[in-house]
Length: 333
Image (cartoon, rainbow, N blue to C red; front, side, top):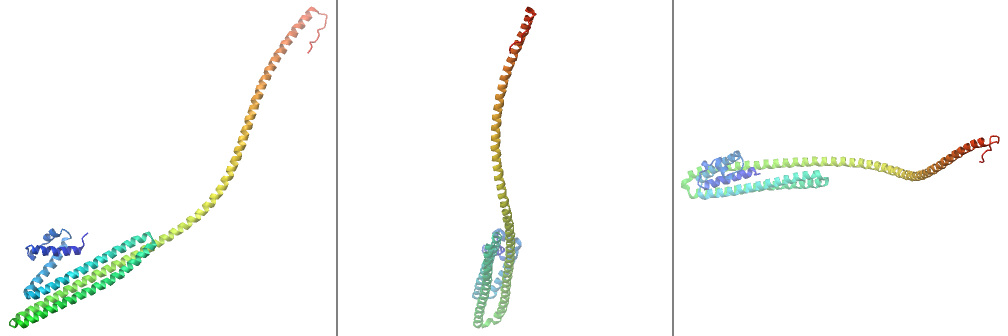
C-alpha cells in the first residue's frame, strides 16, 4: 500500500514533469496529476498541488525580484535543504514503521513462549531507545540544515549588499527588493518551522504508538504467564489423578490375576468334572447294555420257564389220566 508521503512526493514530481513538458503551473489540475501517478486520494493530491503552486509562485516572485545569481543560489540552497529534510523525514519514518512492525512481531511471538516474549520486549526497549536517540539526531540534523540555510541566506544578503554598493544608482529599487526578500525569508522560516513542527508531531505520534505497543506486549506477557500458571495447575491435578488411576490399576491388576487364577482352577475342575461325567456316561451306557442283555436273558429264561411249566401241566394231566390212583410226583427242580 502506497504511503501518503509517496503520493505527495510523486505529486510534486508529476507537476514538475508537466511544467517541463510545456504546461504552466496555474494550468495544472488534480485530474492531470492523478493521470500521471495513478495512486493516492484526490484530496491529498489537491492539497499537495496547492502547496506546490504556492511555492512555485513564491519562487517565481523571488526570481523576478532578485538578480539571477542571487536567486539561483537561494533556490539551489532551498532545494538542497528541502530534499535533505524530506529524505531524513522519510528515512526516520521508515525506521519508526520498521520498529513498530518488529514490536508487533515480538508481541505475537510473546503468545507462544514467555521467554521469547521477554527477549522480544528487551529488543523493543532497545529499539525504542535507539529510536529516541535517532530522533534526537534527526532533530539535530534538521537544526544544522536550518543553520546552513541561514548561512546561505546570509551569504545571499552579503552578495546583495555588494550589489547595492556597486549599483548605488538603483539604491531605492534594491531597498524595495530587499524588503521583499526579507518577507520571503520570513515566510520560508515559517514554512521551515511548520515543517519542523510536523516532524515533531509525527515523532510524538510514533512514540505514542510505540508506547501503546509496549503496553500491549506487557499485557500479552501477563496473559501468557496466567495461561502458564493455569496449565501448571491443571498438570499437577492431572498428575494426582494419574497417581490415583495408577493405584486403582494396580488393584485391578491384582484382582484380575486372582480372578484369572480362580478361572484357571475352575477350568481345571470343569475339565475334571467333564472327564468324570464322560466316564460315568460310558459306565451308564455299558450298564444299560448289560441290563438290556440281562433283560434279554431273563425274558428268554422266563419264556423257557413258561414253556417248562406248560409242559409240566400237560404231563400232570396225562399222568392223572393214565394212573388215577397213583399220586402225582413233583417235578424235580
